[in-house]
Length: 315
Image (cartoon, rainbow, N blue to C red; front, side, top):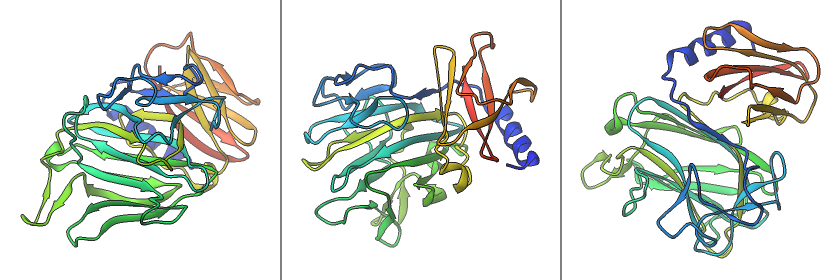
């Protein structure tokens, strides 16, 4: 990453509101048990097994655990995104769909979910009735009455999903973008709404706010895992493909910042929101104790095999 680009990104972080959101590496839960706490809720189905997302050791992007949406055709977990009505918001997570299995999700306009307020969706990762393995689509109609977007994803591999939401113009003009495995699926500034063919307008009636992401077991072929979630009050900046393929990931828990990659991390620098460097290491670094750091937002700059990138950390 070029120095001027890094400084521009840092400046953009300084200018955003400082509402702390969350990261979740899924490591704090109990294997085999439903997850129904903090930012994890459900579609009013009770929060137990067969409803909530399940902690699983069958797959993990980092560490030993991930969250599983199984094949019971009843699980209906919701990741609470806070009913946002202004600002810029970025959501990133990693997903794993085993060969021949199905994945499904949608975005809700409010949490707790009330009657089903779908601004956009449904988002399918292989629908057995209409698709093929490794192919997905978003099925809400657009102005030309076609499927909104098609995409592909790798089976039996972890791949990255990024969604950015812009509520700068208010919820009645909320726009979004969506990326799967580094590829643009929904272009920036696309309406976060369904097309009303009768009225000939974008229907924002269900866009009450940026409510949450619904993860539903759509059929008995449904089975997928998610891990290493980042939700922040700014857009997720997509790194270069070379940086993504190095498998960089980070998590902050109990004041310990864990950094991982497929290759050695040779340099780490941490900057506060004033642009001041508060930490530097030129050795192989995987864990940093941040207990002495003041609460706030930090930009972590790393070098992996000669490739640089940044990540935002909120303590």
